[in-house]
Length: 492
Image (cartoon, rainbow, N blue to C red; front, side, top):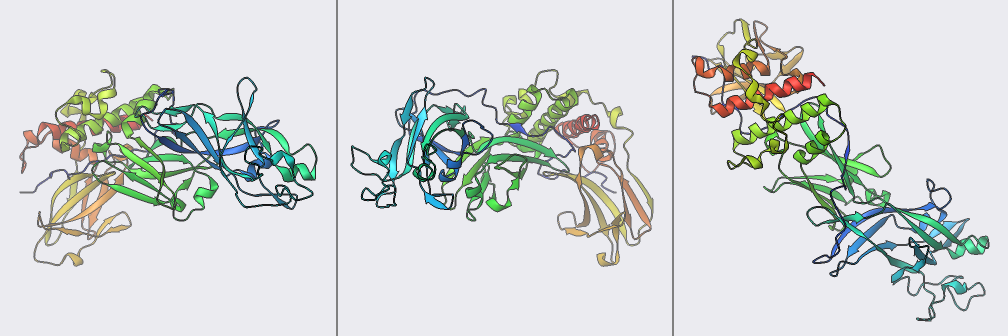
């Protein structure tokens, strides 16, 4: 007897064609923390912008290394550390002379110098030079070294897990002094400017459903970091899975310094935390954050996205929940651990509305004949994409003598020892195409027309017809949730 439906593959995933675009990191639910139990830090891209035209870079920006470091000490006090390098101005090389922040009351506060270019002299900081700049003289140390690293006081911002993710402002008024500029044009060396800060290297997420579920994670990365050929991004899960992306493989986003990497998400993993680490060329994690698809979906549903998009997102979570139950993954019987637990009762578990009659029209068909081979059955494999797998039993002949095609595309059969059968895969089926019947031809004499919804129908009615195994209720719930997801995708 032919096995018309087969056990689902022990993995899970789902596909669709569209979902909302980039969802920025939401800082609305994070607050200032007065005290920290230990030293914490994160890196933030920084630039110097003109005071009178903040959209343009300040001439002193070239002296600023474009990555700052937010440090919180054991007493909860936060500072932003900034480092400087040489710059070229009108053909001459110079350095930052001093750096000061300006508070809300207009008070100018000298930065704390953490490191100096000790031992380096030029005509401006050499106290024996005729062009020695007296503004550089430090009366306490009786030296005139250029600052290499300084710190200014800031207020740190933390996420809900207590990780520092930046500071409470994107722009700080500062005062800078560059001796070489002053020497070339008197009065231009000292200038007010804005220090722009891009808080948190992780800036947001986007779920892309273009044949498989994918999550894009976005970062603000400085040009110098991108140029580091040994830098990388790692995305890992608690069970040890890890994707590693060399920094030069990150995709450029739409904004300046914005890059993203893409991770495939199985449907059963919608509540699985993805730990994303940005690692420099020396192996140091300069920023680490945690996100998951469920969090992203919550933001979409709470946003001003279209109603159809919110329904689609809710059905994604419903499907993920049924996948968790089916595969007993991240689920111990407590519904609070399910992906759709965050939904309102009206949106939750809509698969319960699906009747057998809703799927009855979806039935596969066969036509023609095969020589020395017979159709054995079909299954759906739920990885990060839906794959429809057709099995065939071979008689005494050679599989190489048979040709399998979808349209003009030839498929290569593979052997499954467990079922003692050969199979071919139809991959990357999007949610909108779950009702599409793919016509598989064998040797030009046999055609099998089968859609993913044909399989769903077979699972739902399995206990009413002869079958090699009785499909349990959680299998039916899984395919019903897939059907609801298809309906939602059709409306977007």
